[in-house]
Length: 328
Ligand code: PSU
Ligand code: MN
Image 1: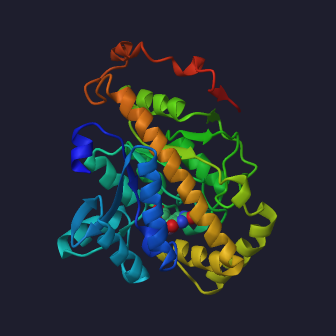
Image 2: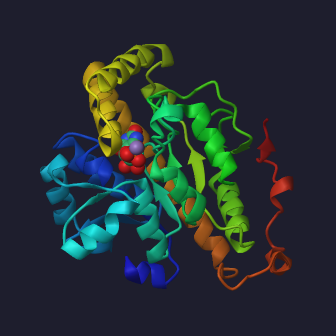
């Protein structure tokens, strides 16, 4: 993994909360290994990320992935705020999107594939429960390929907060924000791109110009694996009601809701979850490969000013890309 990065080869980061908290054993380990294989099939190198014995680690071994998966929720969920404590204690933690982005960026990895991101929770105007994933997206230069976010969240407010923080949310082959199990949420996205090359070009423009920050690449679940919006909504409403009745708060909210929705939908939701993560891993691999080709022409960090973008003339300006279109 380190050699791949040093040589400028494409690398895709993968998170570990999805392994220990997002899926049951043994499907979690099977999926994590299949996701790594899916990245490799696209010609990129996978780097599963976690805190292992206090070390921020990008590129877990198969044995380390297996250990995280077997331990399940006994491994603490690690978001950004937990990293210094785990490091100081020499402890192990399963990294969320926020913590995975931070470690990926430190390792020089720009593309990260996962299932769904955290966001603004329903009722956040009272609870203030807003995932650290959104603020990490505002500050850390990593593109997160996901199937949108689960409708356990307030997806409209999630988009509003990302807009406030200047985080691009780009639909891959879609005009709408996907809602994890469902291809559609009814929420229009401002931008849509239809090829990994166009996505790579957009990422390159963002980082070469000094804009910095993250990007959400929203890749809808394949139609064959989708669970209809109406079907999932009833289960989500029930899970939310249970969380409220039981007074679930803080970092426990997301795992509680994920587990309840999974239980209420039965095995179907797990199958859909696995398929969408695999789809995101494939797209992440393709984007990383395209981005490595572009960045080989120039270096991201060596370009402090927008005027320095002129060396990029071999690239077609984004606005004129035929597959790129403003949708909203
Ligand atoms: N949403 C999912 N599956 C997940 C998560 C979110 O559909 O596994 C995990 C991710 O690791 C994400 C985290 O970063 O939950 C968000 O937790 P919180 O809302 O506490 O920030
Ligand atoms: Mn939260």
